[in-house]
Length: 242
Ligand SMILES: [Zn+2]
Image 1: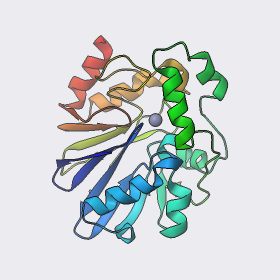
Image 2: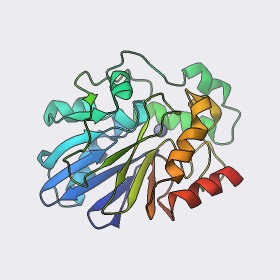
Image 3: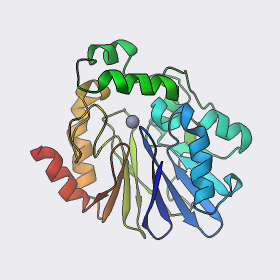
């Protein structure tokens, strides 16, 4: 696990297979995304490593409801109940009123990719096959009065309610899987598309990239891959020329 303070009070956490973000405001914390089920101890450790307690959490914001972004929440919320917020459409997905996720068969069909077998073994250990749902998830109502004053950015495409979050004072954009900067199934680091089978609503993916490119920020914390330093417009231009 690597923790980088990408702007004052904004900590990007890169775990084995996925990232999450902690945003401080004095004693209070916002967590954006929450890793795999097997990341629970790392989520707690990351909170302590930046000098906080889990009880400092005010809320958890979710980019999208895939198991690698909400997996630790059932255990975390059992110990520290806080609001779990995302877009209205995605909140239903977090509650598992529907499921938009690559099936084990989709993944199996992609095992020819370099590194895919090792990757899927790691995911098994992280609890990727668990059925995770968060029944308490609800829709946010902007403006969000939370540490970092996060501004939701509609980036539907990867899932039909996918949401990125701009931290305007810190000039950091948390993109989830609407823009990744690397992935174990991709050969190189850099802004790029995920393998298409991960995207639930591919027709909207281009529109999501347009929405990201329009955001004024200096740093991107992606759902996967290292922190990107540069403007969202530059990142999307790189992605489109990749
Ligand atoms: Zn992901």
